[in-house]
Amino acid sequence: MLGLYHGEALARYGFGEGHPFGPDRLDAFWRETVREGLDRRVTLLDPRECDQVALQRFHTPEYLARVHEQSTDGVGYLDCGDTPAFQGVWEAASTVVGSGLDALARIMRGELAKVFVPIAGLHHARRDSAAGFCVFNDPGVLIETLRSEYGIRRIAYVDIDAHHGDGVFYAYEADPEVCIADIHEDGHYLYPGTGFAHETGKGEAGGTKLNLPAPPGADDRFFEHAWPQAIEFVRAARPEFIILQAGADSIAGDPITHMRFTPAAHARAARDLAAVADEHADGRLIATGGGGYNRNNLALAWNAVVSALLK
Image 1 (cartoon, helix red, strand yellow):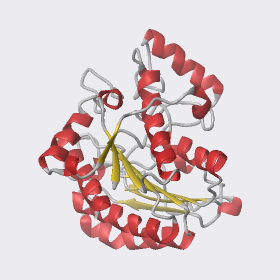
Image 2 (cartoon, rainbow, N blue to C red):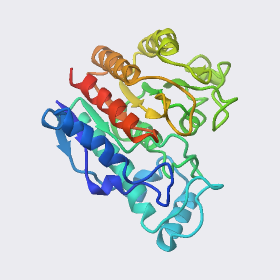
Image 3 (tube, one colour):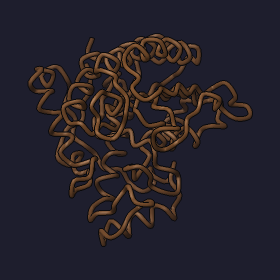
């Protein structure tokens, strides 16, 4: 059975006044989930907030103090202009992380093998700052928790969001135990301007990272060409746990990117990674929704992931 997190507390992570990352994204996904009848096939799970101790596994105390302060007054930005503060942003962002941690605990207890957290995958946040609509880096907290709380060492992070997952990539660029495969729009054309093919890891981690930058307009033909390299790269790492960031902003028609994938790419990524998880990780996989700013696109792509993980 697949676990799926849904609830108002998770939807609160979003920015108002026409911001692309609005709080309506979860409802857009859920309406399609119900329309496809997938809500009857998953185990619905309530969002959970996490505490500061968990956040400090990845983030600096100084940064957490700043988020807490700006969450109280709701004034200003948490980065250079993409990620506005709002009253309650601490609780909303902590619920994104906490839901992933709850999923992790359920998986490690053997209650579930695979879980989808739709509002999660905030892959731009740095250890000491927000970035690109991302307040807390939930994949980073998951990675640190897998190691410190569960003794898991070989972890694969796979990212098909249109934007390079720089907050995860550079946090673990020199870490040989974290395998990263990232398909994204070429940084010459899209924020954050990183993730080039020559970046394959530093020092002892050389060769443990794979960046597959795509030209603007790249469609499913590009994905079908590039994806086998990514999946074999992950399989060769023999991961004990897999995290998928399934951003839907790589789908054709997203308002802030230039890629042209279809939800079929997301379905294949989820299906193939589930197979690798079954081979090497006792089935253990957490998928996150990531970006996606065309509501119809994210509804279709995320439900393609859900459907693939149910098979």
